[in-house]
Amino acid sequence: MIILSSRYRMLNSHELANSIIEQYLTTLWLPSIRSKSFTDLNYFRNIINLVNHHINEQLMEEYVIETKSNSFAYIFWEQHPLRSTIREYLESEILTSSDLSKYQILIIKLFNNPLISSSKKNSLELRSISTRLNLSTSSKVNHARFIGLIEVFLNNLRDSNKFNDVDEFCFESLIREFEDFKFNDRNVDDNGDQKRNHESHTHIFT
Image 1 (cartoon, rainbow, N blue to C red):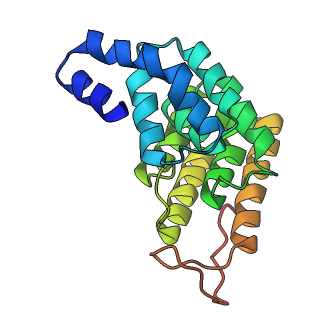
Image 2: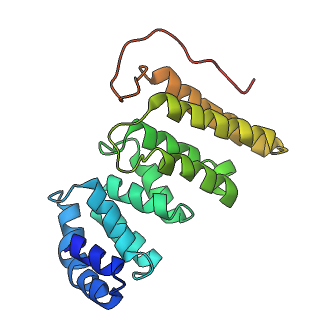
């Protein structure tokens, strides 16, 4: 039904697509996600795409949180990065979550830093790293590219802003999170496979 509804959307048959959403969203799709009988990440993204502009964002945010699926929540957040409730929910889950990748967890940690969350520009730039690397649905992440994009983002953040003392404290917190991520990580090759490697990343921001 998700595929059928998507096809109706593509054909501009919005009434037919909406009728399927209204019939199945709360009776089948969301309960199936909550029970973990439905786990395909691409379908999760299709559901979010389908309900955009049809289901109220705040209501859908509540639905997503009720599923207790952090993968589903991350996909919703990626499309609605300025919504604070879903961001705070994800932050509360990162210590115990088994369905968020280390890359997603770092993005969430950085995003919840006030220097990022209080700025629409910074928020959208950080979100773009997640979308460019397809972090919400891909099981293979180019580790070196991820590191490089985060470094560029943080360097640009430093170079393009005049920080007061509070901003400086927040920025240093961002750096600590990133350095902890690199320190705790075993270097990963371009296919996402772990490998032992004693080469260290060059530190920045000094």
